[in-house]
Amino acid sequence: MRVHTFVEDLAASGGYWLATAGDDIWIDESSIVGSIGVISSSFGFSDFIARYGIERRVHTAGKSKSFLDPFKPEKEEDIARLKALQEPIHAAFIAHVKARRGAKLADRDLYTGDIWVGPQAIEVGLADGIAHPVPKLKELYGDKVKLVHYGQRRGLLSRLGATLWDDAMAQVEERAMLARYGL
Image (cartoon, rainbow, N blue to C red):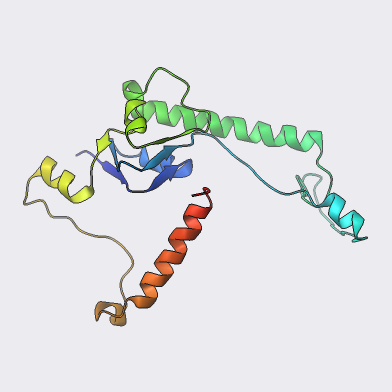
């Protein structure tokens, strides 16, 4: 039996890694997919705390425990260590995408962290087509296909129609998620 993955909004980086678990990846016209790369981001506060006379006290057991500490100046050896950690993860990500998508992939560098939208993603082989779950599964398996929704069990009030709070929280969560990607 084939596994079909559907991306409604965004499957970038780890989300795309998960999407490739499917044999087919179906997206919307405006779905964002890709971002095949590895990222680590932080801030540097060493000048700030020095300017205000703040003393940071850190005590560790093990010389690597304060690796990339944002309150200390960045060290070249920490950056080199981080890169040494990121490279095998990136290589594993690339190998996974190639193993799952194979000959569907365009003959170009898709592993730079770039993202693609809708038809562009299909063109480069990161997705198979535009489709929504119910119509596509009925097209593939017939009108008698039974679709079972798995998710969190709804409470009594929401089953009785009191979903205003749930809807508001879903909107907040969605906006927060999209804000992470600058959308």
